[in-house]
Each structure stands twice: as structure tokens, then as C-alpha cells.
Length: 457
Image 1 (cartoon, rainbow, N blue to C red):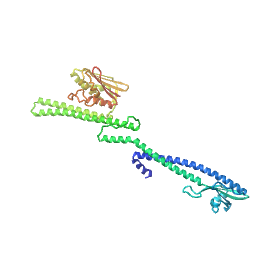
Image 2: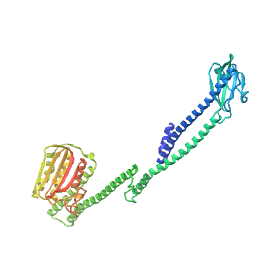
Image 3: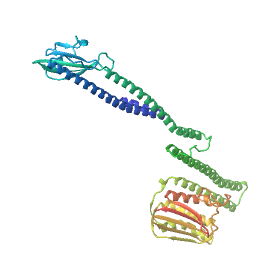
Image 4: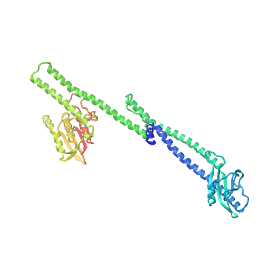
């Protein structure tokens, strides 16, 4: 495995603050190294240019003196000179290098062939004494060839560069430390709310506090918006948990009531001998409670299935045929009650899931017959791709206290739970509309109650 492949997993396992500080330190190191290299290059170029200018000037004065056969001129402070014949024998030399050859045999050959040689003697680092920059050229004097070597000391130039390197290293180190510290403090400050949210969420998971995080109201940054989003999510979770608790309590009550009645009927029937008529009446009562349990179970299962829109399978269906199928089971009930069922629907085809919409409309009609009065009207229209189904009656309408919770599960206008129905009819209709990406609305018309389903078709 490559070095990158070994280090990357370890880096990802580090805390976020550590990774951020390392990233800042690495980035700043590259930036500082680049800046220091540029400064060093610029200063070294300037110093070398000055040194080369001095060396070239000294070289020219030596060449001129050798051609004329005059005394060699003094050069810059610390400069050196050496005059050789074509065979490399020293003819004249500065006292400091009288017995030292400045040129190598290879360089002597190059100069003898007419080339100009320039090189440094000694290194910048590690520090070496007697550092020079020399230049050698071939000069002809009185028909003889002479090799003129000029050299200047590099001590001041090297000392300046070493001081520059030390200053750059010191300044870069301080800058890197300061940038890392600022990056660390910034990262800690930026992630402190996240850690606070994490601690709050851990506390919430233990159930020791209310489902709410402490989010500043006077800020609008990414972390604050994350806190508001988490609070919104927690509010939904709390509301969902409350609905589930209420649902379990209501479902337990609804299931307990028919079971208790069935047990009481059976206990009475078994307490003493009964006639055939009495037993038949008991069985009819038990059958009614069993049917109530079946209806309640089917309604609960339907509501749970509708919790996912994946259970909606849209298909073309006749709107008139769908309403007729929903109304037909209630016509006999309406006739016995001396009431009318009025259906008005256009003969159009709609793209809906008839398997769910038909019982939803049937529930609305059943509610209107149970709790309303007068004629029950079912009207359906299609406009701009939106199907609207409205069921109205001529009764007293919904009470103001009931309207806000009309579509809650087990919600009833009556305070007691002994009335007919399970309180799931409107909740089921609302779930069907929501599964179709539509809406359900309950209101009073002034002449009764009205429930409207609107869903795209």
C-alpha cells in the first residue's frame, strides 16, 4: 500500500479540529515556503548581480594592465588575482594565494581554448572560510598568451544570505505558529455550537430534558441554521411521538370497548339458560361488535398503509362510476332515514387510485348520514388537472372546537366515545388526499357541514 493510502485513513480518523489545524498548517507552510523562496531568490539575484559587476570590472582592469605590461591594479577590498601562462605556470599572484592554483586542469584547458570560466569556491552552507567567486579569461600580451584570473571575496554576500535565511525561517516559524493558533481557535469557536448541539442531543436521547436545543436568535450563519433545522426536526419528532402516544391510547380504548361489550353479552348469555330468540339477539349484538372491530382494524391498517405514498397506484378511472360505487352502499340507509343522496359528477376520466379514493368518499358520505341532516350532496369537478370532491349536508355543521382537529385520528365532535363510528373516517379521507399529494378541508357552509378533497389527477 502506498504512503498516501496508509496516511489518508489515519487522517480521516482524527478529530475535525485537528484535521482543520493540520490543513491550515500545511497550507500556510506551502505559502510561507513559496514566499520565502521568492524573497531569497530575489535578494540572492541582486547580491550576485552586484558581485558579478564588481568581478567583471576588476577583470577588465586586469586584462588591460596585462596587455600593456603595466603594474596590476588593486581591486575591490579582499580581491585576488593570478596570472598564468598558456601551460598553467603561475607568473604573478596575490600574496594570499601565491602557492595555490585557483583553476583546475579542466578549467585551464577551457580557458586556453578561448572560453571564459566563472565559478564559486567554497559553499554557503555549511560555512567555509575563504569563499571566492573567480573569473578567468585568455589575454594576448606582446604575442604571448596569458590566462588572467580575477577573484573577489563572497564573505559579505554569503553572510547576508545566511542572515536572510535565518530571518525568513524565524518569521515563517512565528507566522506558522500564529496561523495554526488562529486556525485552532477559529475551528474550536466554529464547532463549539456543534458540540453543544451534540451534547444537547445526547441529553435529549436520555429523555432528561425537553426536545429543544439552545440556538442563538441573533445570528444567521450555517451553524445557527443547522440548529434551527435540528429544532424543527425535534419539534416534528415530539409532535409525532405525541400523536403516537395519543394513537395508542385511543386505539386501546376503541378496541377495549367492543371487546368488553362482547364479553358482557356472552357472560349474560351463559349465566342462565336462554331462549332461542334471546340467544339470537345476543349473537346479533356480538356480531355487530365483531363487525365494529373489523371496521376499526381495517381503518387502522389502511391508515398505516397510506403512511407511504408508495402504496398509491394511479390509473385512469371514470369519475361518475367511482362516485356511483361510493354512494350505492348508502342509498338504503338514506331511504330508511327518509333522506336524499344527490350526486353530481362530470363524465370524465381521472388519473387516481380508485382503490383508496372510493372508500374515502364513502366515509365522508357515512359521516354526513350519521351526524348531519337533510339531503347529502356529493359534487365532483375537474379543473386545470385538479379533482375536487365535496360532500355536504344540511345539519348543524361542525362545532368550532372540533374543526381544528377534524382530521385527527379518533377525533369526534361528541365528548363521549359511545356514539357510532370510530372517529377514523375523516382521518382516512385526509390520508388518502395527502397520499395523492392533495389536501382535505372541513368547513361549515351556513346550511350544514362540508368536507372537500382536492387532489391532482
